[in-house]
Image 1 (cartoon, one colour):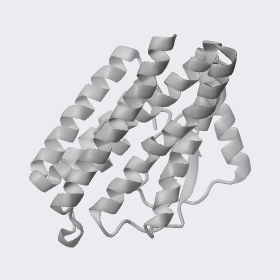
Image 2 (cartoon, one colour):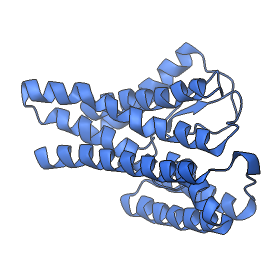
Image 3 (cartoon, one colour):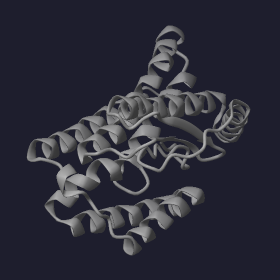
Length: 242
């Protein structure tokens, strides 16, 4: 859901369903996104962003349909990336966790063709694509709304205490805004900042029957840590190979 310097994808798999975008609109949206990134970072990064976002959202989409929340849809948002939406909310928190983590885990698969091309050509250009895809998914794991990490870790934090979730997400959101200002990714800062403010105004209501069991809590935290480790491995490989 996010590129190194801007909010290129949201992976917001837990939102309400929205009307499906037409194919021409999706093509234009993707072209605008690619042109924007390509202008600043080169065509390899642009290709990595479009492919990475698509695979990331497909990951959400597959799990949305598998756990009975579909049919899901993918929407491309000009200059912001994409979002997967569902027809009905998950009936348990653990399903929501699986939907959220499916994006970053599947999104890393988009780096595979860039890796093979790099191995065949030894061109450093392709390492930039690998790094970009790794960062898209790594930043999405941050537990700051509306990123995937907040949907994956939020229920686990709430199981300890509801306020722990809100305080932790708010603090991480503030850190994300500070990073956005430092890196001049102002759109990212506005997006995260508004979401952080919403945490102070909206009380999160969780259905008691659908709350995480102890095993599901351990699985949620463990899967998030696995996803984090894999993203760090991809980013570190690209960085050290440059």
